[in-house]
Amino acid sequence: MADVEIKVENIVASATLGKELELPRIAPALENVEYNLEQFPGLVFKLKDPKTAALIFGSGKLVCTGAKCIEDSIKAIHMTVDRIRELDADIPEEFEIKIQNIVASANLGKILNLEAVALDLENTEYEPEQFPGLVYRLADPKVVLLLFGSGKVVCTGAKTAEQASLGVQKTKERLMELYLIEE
Image 1 (spheres, one colour):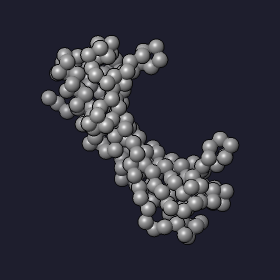
Image 2 (cartoon, rainbow, N blue to C red):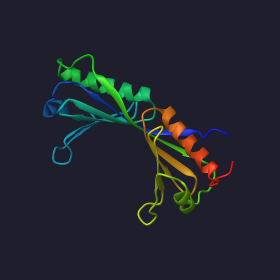
Image 3 (cartoon, one colour):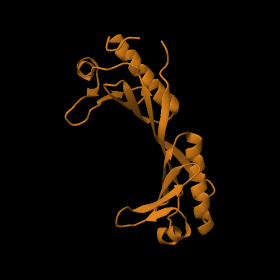
């Protein structure tokens, strides 16, 4: 059986600097930054390369979004922290970066009858009046897949690209076992 190719669409990573940050002092010193406390409790710092956005909070937490690979996500966090360190030399050299979520897409290449899938496949939610996709929860790997009638799939909740790929592959195999798609 041919593997289904996935495409990583977005990676969300976080870092904790272990030190509170003075956002009103940091905001004016960064370019490409949005800071409006009434709308959002942190800074939004946009990087061009890698094309990402870093959410910077006063607690010293950072969330990086928009990267298409883990390396770019880590690079963006380090670039952001380096910029903050220029303004606050007390930022620790060592800090932990965690991958929180990887969103990937794939195409099963087959039309899906979502009503039949909802009836036969376990751990699903399907309410077409509210959302056009079927929600399928896998336990191993622990990911959530959105299946669409077109055969397109979105996988979320993965911590690695391999988990996303495995989630899509297991879903395809399960749909084939239940005769909901053919090879």
